[in-house]
Amino acid sequence: MESSAENNKIIQTQVIIIGAGPAGAMSSVFLSKAGIHHIIIEKEIFPRDKICGDACSGKSVFVLKKANPKWLDEIFINKAENLACNGLLFVSPNGKKLSLPFSKTGQPQQHAAGFVTPRLVFDNFLFNKITSPYATIYQKATVKKITRENKAVTVEIEYQGGTRTITSPLIIGADGDKSMVRKTFVNNDMVSKTGCVGLRGYYKNVSGFHENNFIELHFLKELLPGYFWIFPLSNGNANVGVGMLSEVVRAKKINLRELMLHAIQNNPNIRERFANATLVDKIQGWGLPMMNKPIPLSGDHYLLTGDAARLIDPFSGEGIGNALYSGMLAAQAAEALLKENKFSADEIKVKYDDVLYRNIGDELKMGKLLQKLSRQGWLFNLVVNKANKSQTLNTALTSMFSDLDLKKQLRKPSFYAKILFNK
Image (cartoon, rainbow, N blue to C red; front, top):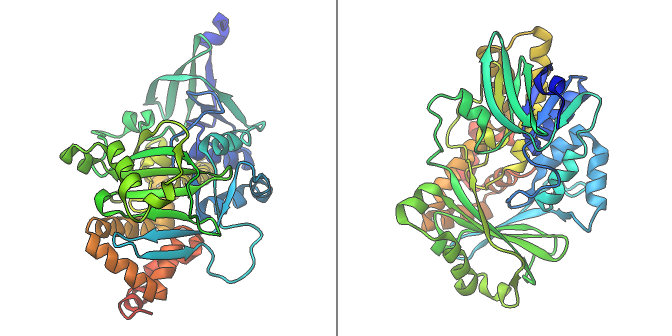
């Protein structure tokens, strides 16, 4: 139990971060690199699990390398928990396959362009990297109230049987799809109807994986407009799951778990691979707040990252990479804002929203387009066939999961002309 003095004191800091998942952890890491004092408020105690597909694409590798290249060495050396992943396999409703290696350079790489690791492992890895003289962490802390007045944000928390009040000119919301920061500051905030429902189960003895450990997205006829995934893990198990638009699940009253199990047992493209497979634990579900269209990610004295900003790709379900990337940009924006001592909505938009959308906005737009295409089986069959013939489209799809620099091609009109002529 805290003493009365500890319980009543007001703590001031340069930045408050709510949530210590990938987005919050990366915000903290880059704030510490800039020498900025901050407080992290986390409702759980690490290590803790997070229901997810567990796949980390090239974007995750890019951000981790920016944070500390040695961390990638730690990840890839630890083969007992982390599996190097070198590409993505799409399977269209008609069963046609499209292989997308993550690296198009032809040059040898120090590490694979991606990896798969359970979130229980990965999030704890990141959490242990937060430790620094600039970071104060409150675990098992409950946020009771967030207010904004007198050019500051105040957060009241319950911690170790008492209460603490923390104030700062800037708060970073990294607290997931049910973000309290978002609910506090975004008027008329509603759960997005374009969100997705995901189910995940761990299976052992799944067969038929790609020799280079490609992660797989299967667009099965019976799951459209959703998709089925199989991601290999280092221990020989696989992360297996389904994702479908929330509005479709509600409108058609779909039992997604039954649909997933039916596909595993009956779909001709995957049932043989599950002939000897068994479920390791129970199938669990969670919400995926997908980006439908560009939305404000910040306002006076606050900004949102990761799932709190609904940055999951509408097509691929990519979430970890966008969380890490937004966390890095949030810290960089915070550094610039603190130097100028300006925290208005306009200032934060320029330094955070505009930068983020400039870098991954086109990717998210393409994800939305591909999501629409995947709703029609025949049309998605056509896209996969086109991608097998058009090197330009093939490279564009690859860029969604690999090198951020490749995404610049999406802004060029000539890019779309090449697709039309199968170049």
